Structures are given as structure tokens and as C-alpha cells.
Image (cartoon, rainbow, N blue to C red; front, top):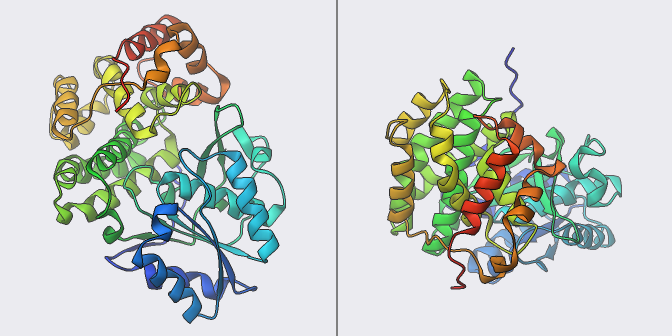
Length: 380
């Protein structure tokens, strides 16, 4: 039996954010007061004034939370929740990359229940209700706007997850104008994350023919659009956004696999952009994945524009084309392969390990850790 979760409502339109966010939330809010969770960069852009003006025109007050940086942390979620509660907000609008969206999603839960973020970590407690939520991604990477999963770190840097279908937004706004200011290296890192979501969701142990349809369409959109977008072709941005959305929805239904296992483990040791870490892990493991007996790979490779046998070469050529440097930050110099392997085997990362085809032995994991940590260490 194949079961798919529901897909959020979706608007795909240039310039739609300034009107659709307020049009969606105004009728859902009793307090007429929205908490806006936004990357600090966006609060300084002209479009932000238009978004706030859209809420004002609908008779809504706004409180803005932008005091965060880097990967999402439980502390950010709890701080934003406290600010929203004190202001009397009863709905949330998230604007930014994956960090902003995941913070906004968890805030929508914690505002409703009064619990902390870690109360829901690793499925410890169910998420059954949230305050109304609208999300507008400014990167094409995590696909967080499409699913009910939020990723965040505890105070020790360990990546956690929380899940509940109630965390899906009332509306996801895909506005390609929001991607036009993204630097090429971030376009590349985020785009690889979206591509790998689609690849792993379409080829892992839990993939199904129905869910695979979304993975395949995501790859058909992302694979050709990503190099164009990195090189400044704005006509490719809508395809990249839609592909990222489909990929985010695909992982909702069957999760990811080894590349994400590695990147989540890496985050426990030092700051590194999730998209970059996942891309490096993907290249380091794709020969292993491509060598497996896996009926799904023919269609997956075809959607990427290549063959199963050529997947490793295709991956490396794509990463070359979009300018991804194969370096780790200097802070990884003190991390041992044994330490990384141990984190890859942690309970929080077990679902990604268990989904991988072919299965990963402890020896396989150590070999992968050695490959990753053999990369040059250099801060840009």
C-alpha cells in the first residue's frame, strides 16, 4: 500500500509574497497580529516594507523576529516563541532560507501549545495543532515549505528533527523574485540540497512508485535549471523553486539517505552550510549508491539526464559546473573519522542510514567518514 501525505496549498508567481501572505493569514487570525520570522538580510530589503504593508492594509499588526544566524537552533525557536507570545501574535509568517522556515514552523507549534522546541525533538511528543502559518522561501534548497518536518540543533550542536503534518503551512509562496539576490555559491549549495532530496527520496529503501513521481519531476526541473541559475539566468529560478518544493514534498513521504546522514553528522562538530556538506557527502557516496541493485535508479538517472553507470561522473561534472569547491572548514581538522562515524551511527541519524540502498555496515560508515575528512581543510 502507498500512502501520501497532503500537499500544502501553493502559489507560484513572481512578486506574489507582498499580497498573498497577508491575504492568507488575515482571515485565519483572531488577534490580527502576526509574528514575522525573517532572515535579517530580508528585513533591510524594499520588498520587506511591501510585505509589512500588505499586513497593515489587512488591518494586522506585525512583530518581527530576525535575531538568528546560521543553522536553526532550539534557543532561537524558544526566543521567537516568547516574543510572539508577549506580543499577542496568533499566526506566523516565515521568510528566508531553510533556517527561517524551520524556526517559523516550530514557533507555530510552540505558540499554540506553550511547550519548548525540544519537547518535540525526535518525535518524543506528537505535533497535532499549530497556529496558522505561511512560508515564503528565499532559497531553492530545503523544500521546508512543502512538508511537516523541521530540523534544528540542541545546545550542543546535535541536529534534531520534529515532525507533524499539522506543521505544514496554510500556503507556500514560491516567488522567484526572492531568489534573484542570492549569491552564486549559495544558489549552488542550496540547489544541490534540493537535487539530493529528490535523488534520495526517489531511490532509497522507502521510496514508492507514487512518491517517486514527485522525485523524478523535481530532478527534471532542478538538474537543467541549477547551472543556469548559478550563472545568473533568472528565467530558471521558477523551475528551481518548483523543483525544490516537489523534492521537499518527496522527502516528507520517505525521507532521505546516506548523503544527509553524513551532513547531519558533520553539523555536530563544526559550522558548515548544510547544502555544501550534503553535496560533498553525495559526491563521496554516489559510486556506492549507483553500484547497488536498485530498480529505481534507471528512472532517477534518466531524470538527471544521464545513466546509472555514469552517475558518479555526472555528479562531479555538475559540481564543477556550478563551482562547488571540495573543501571543509579548518575547524574540521581536529575531527577524526572515528568521531564522525560514531555520529553517523547516532539514533538521530539512524533513519537516514536505514533508508540507504545498499545497506551501510559499520565498516562502510567508517570508510565514508575517512573519505569526507580526507578533503582539504581551508577557510574561504
